[in-house]
Length: 279
Image 1: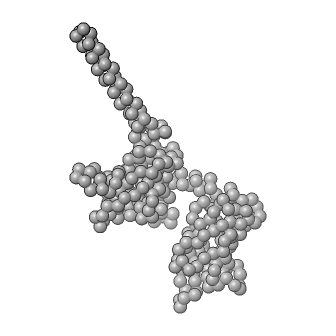
Image 2 (image 1 turned 135 degrees about the vertical axis):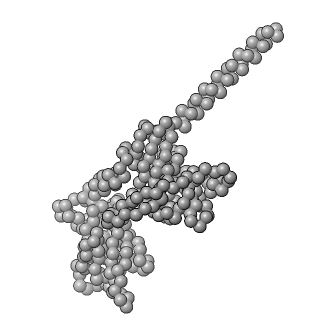
Image 3 (image 1 turned 30 degrees about the horizontal axis):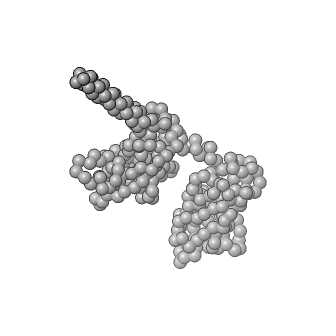
């Protein structure tokens, strides 16, 4: 009987060990399942704070590397003011032995050709399309908690090619046919006292697409769009301009000169369109 009981004990122990190994393997497989194949991708990196974001030259894009079931995204930030990141909470980042993410020095090229050096970081990505914690510390030595999301991976390693491809896919011409339409538009920037009329009129003639911007003031005497100066199309009432637009999916940076002050002032504004509102 003792031998039989001993045999039963040994068998149970072996079975338990096998089950533990199988459970461990199952957990590893789940962790390794990223949903995409190993390789390099251009992915979107968004955060919960306007002070912590990808450099504007890269339009929220970073390079996502997937290898052996692990994902890391490299993003170039807007400056060198963020000196370290931590893949977790600020509280854990302060603990002794916490492994901080050190910066790289990246070169970015803006749309006007200006080049700058900024800090970049290689951030571990636990999952796509899900929020995860990333803490940061700046030049003042304070840690801050943030939430980030990595999404929309596109195979490749050239951010600008993907940006240009998206611009082509989202071109204004894909939303409207020849003739007149309307679109909701919002204005950001300046003192916040100015506004523009919404909805605005869109005019399409062949490859040329323009939008009619009507200001809440008669004192704007010119606008600058993509380096080109445009004069008002009216002489009475609030200032009205007809300016070109290449995409309704991206914010349009403009400059408007106002004569309402003691001296004329050029003010930077951003026009944001809602393509879903086009009629």
